[in-house]
Image 1 (tube, rainbow, N blue to C red):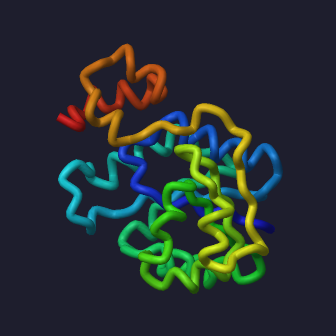
Image 2 (cartoon, rainbow, N blue to C red):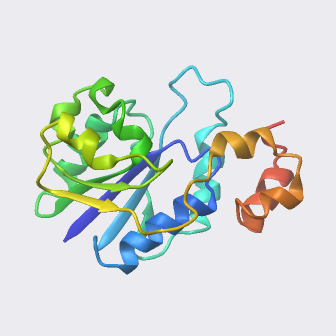
Length: 187
């Protein structure tokens, strides 16, 4: 089985996250996709507790789209991948990242270890993904998703406009908006 690993803060989860996850599954790039919200170990003032982000993600869980809740304490993606490799010994793991992450990928802790996995990179901000991949000598085991529209949604922008309910409806699902309001998040 081929398992996609989508690590992020999902702060909050938005339509872009879900659209790319469903696209990768529906197009058969992976058999199963794990979404793993990062813990609260970074000095980000705007990040809400991981339990809320997990709750919001749970709205999208299916038999193929799994919200991983046990690895949130691992601060680095390579640690997550190492742990998953132990769990899924007989399966192929691939890492899903946005193109904006490839710019500074060499700053990630143990990034060379991550380059050993197949990468699924989805286009963001009109970046030339291949240009950055050449920097890493990564030509094989790369899938570039550049034909999905409307995935350039920013969680930062959402947090900045959290009180603009009508604008939010274009960016996040109503069930997530309702959850944010009910729990008084991002105030």
